[in-house]
Amino acid sequence: MTDTAFDLFARISHSRTADEVVRQIELLLLEGVLRDGDRLPGERELARRLDVSRPILREALKELEARGLLVSRQGGGTYVADIIGEIFSRPLVELIARHPQATADYVEYRRELEGITAEMAAGRATEYDRRMLTRIVEAMRTAHESGSFEAELAADVEFHNAIGEAAHNIVLLHTLRACYRLLAQGIFFHRHLVFSSEPARLQLLLQHEAIHAAIMAGDGAAAKAAARNHMDYIAVAIREAERTGEWQRISRLRLKQRGLET
Image (tube, rainbow, N blue to C red; front, side, top):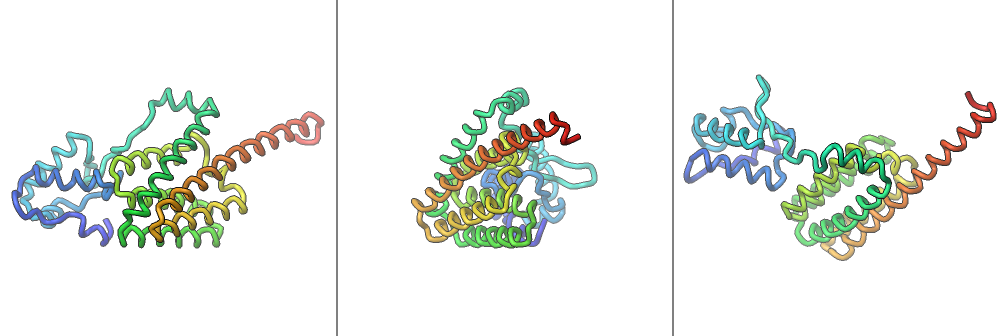
């Protein structure tokens, strides 16, 4: 873990039991501080930071593993398990993929969710939250200016995750993370469709900047409106990208039919 993680595990000052260790790590998971795939410090280091004996720590880690919250890798340490998991069963995912209406419903759902989240973040963001959001937006600008397509996509998801964290609502946070996992997997649509043109990428950057500015100003109404406008734009961009793609496919078939393309 990075140096910034050294404050995560606070010394247990009272009852030094396995239950107390379990509770502290549970809260770090529940509050989204520890994410899927994060590696915990080594046993000796973690016991020292929690100020508990190694047998107590082992008991706590064993309990967390039994409950599916942590996983041990042979010779590789202890990691946060995939606690988000699949939000839909595989048969349902395949069914959704065959029906375009599901994409529209997903965007509609995210429109409301993103609006509420941005509104809450504007009223609840701490100085640390604001600093993180600003850092991500700066990274987004740098990626856009350098033409780093994948870096801009990654910053996009990280930005929305950070807003979810700044809203300080545990259920909302994990719901959003599940939504973003579906997005990253391309279940409803491929984000590359939306980022496929320079004008679209510029609009998305400006929209993210508007959401950021509203949250930084503590203006909940403006943050909510900016987030909804962002999702409205994405809905239109998806339809346009899909339509353009279909037109290109038809045009290519016509060329092929006329013997102008092999």
